[in-house]
Picture 1 (cartoon, helix red, strand yellow):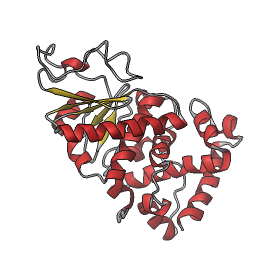
Picture 2 (picture 1 turned 90 degrees about the horizontal axis):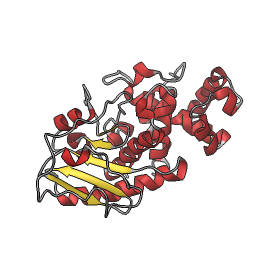
Picture 3 (picture 1 turned 180 degrees about the horizontal axis):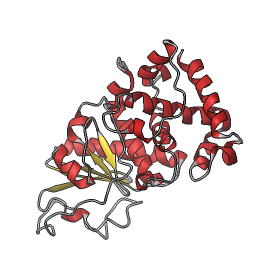
Picture 4 (picture 1 turned 90 degrees about the vertical axis):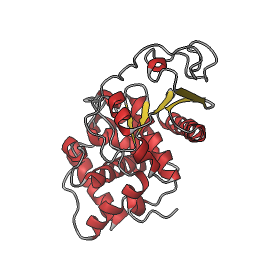
Length: 282
């Protein structure tokens, strides 16, 4: 796959909403004949309890497609697009399960970006392709449409990882770990070379510019000048942890600290990560 502009071309920006609020409910219950699956029966395995607000999102206009272990609900979205997304959601669920553990794959595909922003309680969705709340992934139609097939898989897996880890609740882990871990799971097995996926950061490192420290919350803000590089830095930090300490150590790092889990103070981890960037990207 050719990805000439690195991560931006693959992902078109997929900032997770670390403080996303609950979904807004619809105007009322679905009328008879609405294209909606029964709430208490005939649901895919792993989806035993459907959130009560979901059937009321788009009364009379919701269309649902069941994957093997996923549920995709769309509003004025072509059935073929929903079916394709269900396949990707199943694939993402398997990817998350292989690293973290089981997760319920519920994906909403609104008709417009404005509708998606309202569902997530988001103030800005600029450059996004999907968002995560505590229990579901919400697709941004315009951003998602610009993604490559591989980019769609990476984005859905990234956001479903946030659902699995509870990262959207915020504050439990450093943002570099939350975003880097989601990218690690998303890219794992995608077959994208490191210097392609991290093209923006690679250009800086080749020019002799190596980040002084791990990215912080401000680096991941919408419109941040080095947003792509922040994600690449976080992803490569997690990739470094896996290569040196193993994948299970990266999982244990959630809810812990680098000293306890890795035997390295964060300052030493940072220096080792900077050396890793030079080795992988220069």
